[in-house]
Image (cartoon, rainbow, N blue to C red; front, side, top):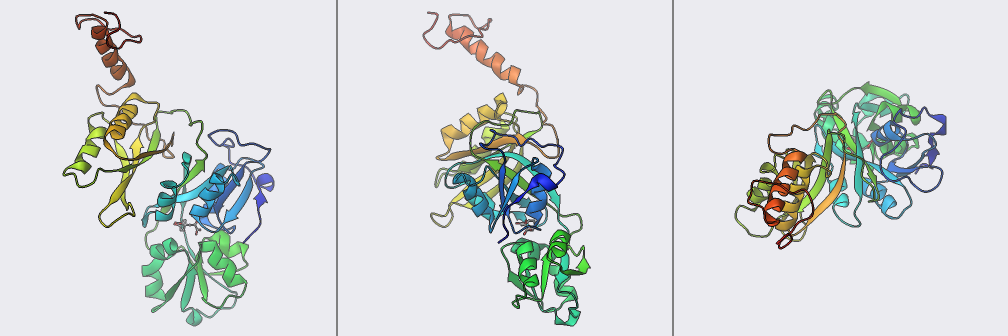
Length: 348
Ligand SMILES: O=C(O)C(=O)C[C@]1(C(=O)O)C=C[C@@H](O)C=C1
């Protein structure tokens, strides 16, 4: 596996400040799915401040564990692909073990090369080494152009390229980004072979729990929710926690809870920030109802789409409702409000 590299010889991304608490020491250490040349590395360069130290590891869970063990200050891991869907290894690792918070998201266009050792005859390409997500995105093209081709799984796209360049004979080509083709001295036999042109992968920046990025008006909150067992309508009751407070969802997927067949948890992206009243009210409702809710961060949306706040669900509407109730608790007749601390039997 490659050794760490620092951001000093690179042009840092204009947003050189990663959200979240400042890491100790001079350099932010960022763990990512390596080796160098992966799509994950491209995601890291979108957020790495100058002087950042990049730490390649062999899986997304290993990158998250590096943050849990304090061997890294941040992890950048894939969470969702526009063609293949959710990255289960990331979703499952985030929802178990010591809590971590998502502090940012980035999107990387995914375009694949069929990379070979220079001089390879196309007729000799029978096995391709790559990450299963990459294979799933190019399988139809590969089967059409290399009939009978076999997928040999690699820990990442660039890991396939690196092994091929080192003379590995378990496969004849690597399916990888152009950055890996170049880095490992391979040749692109074909480029841009995706089954779906325009595919993108969304990555998240993960930090130890602590401070949250401030609300921007265009934010997401990620949670994992378990449902009570064997209760008719429990999924509907969970969804009602959002709908009655005017809270929209941008992603919801079920994941097996792992304890027995038919037991599921839900991984959910809420449109909004935990600093917003309607989101807080939905979270309080979920906490009352669900046997297990895990908060995984509130952070700015990469697409900048602002939340639509429905009538009656703005922060001021929630505050006004509470003040009205407090006014009654203080002995009022229900026509006045009180905006201070008041609970039964205060004011009597
Ligand atoms: O192997 C890589 O290059 C990665 O960064 C991993 C990964 C993934 O897990 O989805 C990222 C983007 C592509 O969708 C294919 C593979």
